[in-house]
Length: 333
Image 1 (tube, rainbow, N blue to C red):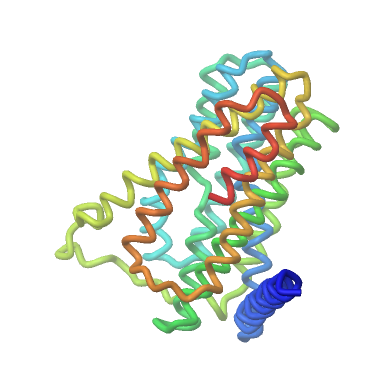
Image 2 (cartoon, rainbow, N blue to C red):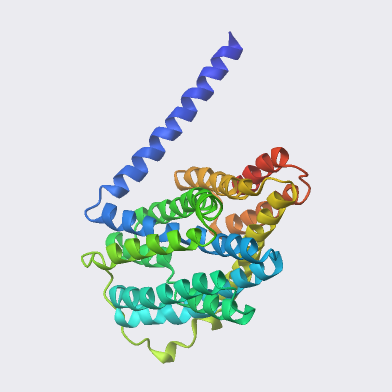
């Protein structure tokens, strides 16, 4: 009887957490105009989880070279990393709508050029150049949405829940995107994955650009007396940490495609990457509804440690059957 009582209590407690979680996020989405920009941002962000993997799948199929495929994906990500701070300044100065439209035009041209170049077996430097152009014009949609939340709810406790929701949606993107791009690139045509990602970027970006009521007011030219943001020690620590974290995720795309091909199941790459994101999604949902006693700096350090520990099983799994739980565990950590 005692065992059953504990089981029932645990079940009721779990159900209570789910109910609180749903209430928290439902109240956020009931804020006027919030649901519209969240949906537009979700569509635009879905391509984020498809671009690098789509490039790897396309180039590896057309050239049989994982090295070149990884280099093309790296060129796109490097272009994105270098350009992102500068694009952020343009957004602050001219507003999200103008930046979205200009970047969308350049990103579309670069992506189309990359797909065409791969199809006609263009030289490697052409693939790398077009990939870099495509990545350099990719706006950080997640940052745009977080700026909208900040303008909408201000500096209130609701903002932390809104940011947790955005992080959860980031993970949802990485659950859906890898499976979708793998299906398109392997089941339809090598370049279909990148083209599908481009369509989502266009639709989501245009929908977001049309929503003027939640667009933050441009800050204009920043006061140069404040100095560069990267000069602040705290930001340098964050940048270094997320460069290392980005290396993990960037390597994971290529490594998982190569692993799936090596074990004779190339179509498993997308679902395995989706399992990583699914674990992260569940962890994000739990994080956003919990009241933490630990200060933010300790939570940050702990999350980095468990992230590192969670990646170790990925390097040891010899088969898809064992890689699946390792991938889900890595995401949850």
